[in-house]
Amino acid sequence: MGDVLAGFHAVWEFESDSVLIRYERGIRTPKLFQALGERRIPLSAVEGVSLAPGKRGTVVLRLAPRPGADPLVEAAAGQLREGSDPYRLVLPAEREALAEYHAGELGKLLAAPGPADRYLVTAPEPPLQFKAYDAKAAFDGRAVHFRWSWTGASSAKWKAGDQSFPVAGLSGVEWRSPEVFEGYLRLLRHGSPGPDGPAGSVRPDQDPAAVVFGLGYGPVHESLPFAAAVLAAVRARGPVPALPVPARRDPADIAERIRHLGELHRAGLVTDEEFSSKKAELLAEL
Image (cartoon, rainbow, N blue to C red; front, side):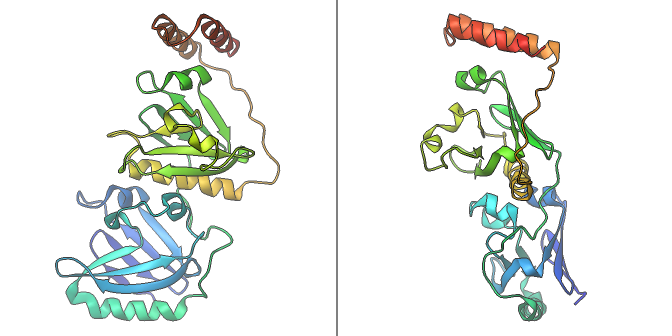
């Protein structure tokens, strides 16, 4: 098709096999759009297109992605607000005829609907990181790392120590939007019950495989692309599980951990036995 349709916060470029979406970086543009920057949506990843009246003299052109085609949509699990939907293009009402034309042309090119057997839309690329309420989370493409914060992490997480989760040991992620009550990102591991089972009944603030979100911590535009990248890596992983390789720790970091552990011990949050055991573990990492 080769045409371009400019709306509020985004420009769609129509090609024969895809729609290239370029998001604006203006101050009023949703932060998620700014973080995504640009996305190419293959038509094979789309099962429908619609055009509907919008608010205050606008129309909305929207693509409906196939289930399982986009890791971002799968991670979001229907929790995105309407204004942050990356598949919506809001246009002035005077462009309705043009939008209707493109909707009709797209409809002719779409494949049969139904779930996709693999991700067809490219996920955000690692390395990625963000600051949750109780940890700093990082993903290098091979493993997810949680480093607990002094002020936010629970004693259960401090007792468990910083965590590293190789992609090969994961089966998925569970993301809850920080825009709703008790947002979090939980990693689901092979051989462990799902989020509705016993493991899922553990509160995220007590689960070493989860980080929790708070006001200003783990916002959607940081934590959701992170979750999508992990999901895509899990789906693309090889059949042979990779074993974690212990890494040498910075002596200064170990000293800080021991000092904080001592504070927990003095406050009565860690027993004498737990203090001695955890201190020995930290020293062994030197």
